Image: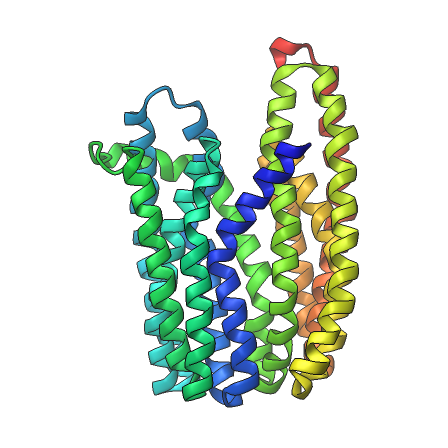
Length: 414
């Protein structure tokens, strides 16, 4: 139980070094920068985060298992290099599209924001594969090297906004900070010999592309689901987008915390299946109630503390409270769906998860187009809540059936 919590905490810290600084930056921008520039930066960051998810091409989920079972460092280095090349190529293409979209939407300011977010994309692509490697090697404690640059970047962003009140300059500071953190993770990979092996061949790249395709399809659906709310709001009202961004950024740390707990389910469930039935039963008794309890606590804290932050720190965005409270309710559903996904992955049910996530994305898209024009930010949050509820109703029975099927199988057939 303790190792489960410490692993989740280390993983959360590693991710916080990137998304946490962005959240702080956007919240301070909401208070100090002008609304139009803030909306421009919010749009660019949301678009680049969607591009990151698509450019990952499912390599995170696949590489975690591949690195864990690889017998030699040479093979692990080839996997890491292949993933970096694929992510870099797809990320470069996505970045060009983002620059075009930002330019069309916001003109010269959008073009500058789009160019700068390319650094954010590069940093998170490097960080993603480094975190996966450390997770597979059970070395997540190495992520503590990110604590200092994250703190310094957050302080520099706040200072920049206090001095200039310019969201573009603040975005530049965020880019510099994240590139520094990424360079530290490159050093971690190099210290493990992951950047000194032979380069992957074209055959290696084709193999990874074909192997990751099913997971990539699910990642694309997840990416659309997680970012299309901001994109739809941007087409309806920039004011509604700014309001929604405040609520969403306050919600995001809690979301990542809950999903980080659930993300460890994948590895723990797979290990339990590989051992024996007693380990599988202990997994269900110990870990699942803990995740449920943490999700309920996180929802209560977000409901109360988030509302206070808006009332006293961002009074101009008082209308964000409605969306924030809907997000608080959604945390329990997010924890449920993430846990069910981990169990289904451990049971080798990737195709089932992809179909369910596709249905969830379609439900969210329909809800956004129906509710956003009339309800704005609250409508966007409600659409996501309804889609998550549909996903939970469908996915949980599948996860239970898959787990029971694994329990009924003899050890050698799992």
